[in-house]
Length: 336
Image (cartoon, rainbow, N blue to C red; front, side):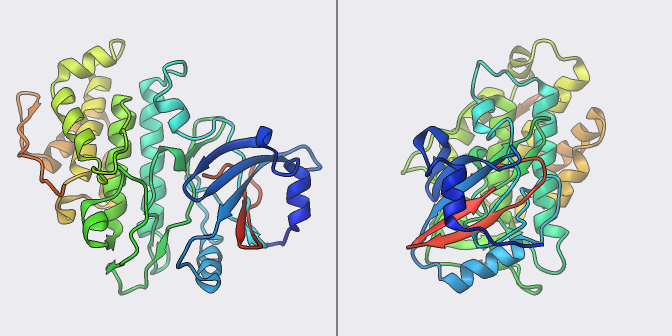
């Protein structure tokens, strides 16, 4: 049941949006930790106004997002022009995947990849007639609970498609540098394959532990893709990165790496849909390897023989509660 929350209450539970309560920030706002009267932690996201986004459109998007219910999607439950979601004990993925002081074991990385893929499959293929395209998948928008269960968050840029619509164009391209599909950042073309591209970058980062350094001259992360393709195409690199894994687990790493590369194909038609990716991941390593080879046939002797790269080439959660949205004097607040 959706419920409203007053701005003053948000101020009270965040110590007036104190810098000491700040959990993180991004291009669209700042996230603060709030403590409810019952002691439960929540995240409150103060979202800046986005030019070109009208109130009606914003509220419609929120209305649709509040109906999403999936273990790998941060859930919106209320509104007041503000959202509330579960507090995530482990913060966002970027805090763990690159941090050498928090070394993630391969089975954790694999579970995170699987969860993200399942969440994206839900958004793209399991809603009634209307897929949602996230348009801003990146490590800081993947939140991890105390069991490292990933939750896709921050739907500020998402697009809700009609049942007959599979692709559209926009003149206002907005997203995160290094994660935008080439056809989106160069032509404004939007489809579910836009998210698949971002997913591929995410998978490659999770598998390799290497950071996709953002550059204004490389909106689609092609330098990162080219770098990890060259370094990680041989099994020897995977073995050196994961020296304690058995043969089957190493093959699983290899399979996930190849799936990631397939997701970042320049041609959107060559990127697999979310359902196909999900159907591969749960299988045993040998079967996953066989399927990954079907996706990427240009592999020989453990090394990729890929062609030249084309030139074109924040919220948090808590123990299952609410989310809100609030607007005050030109600023939106998200409650997690």
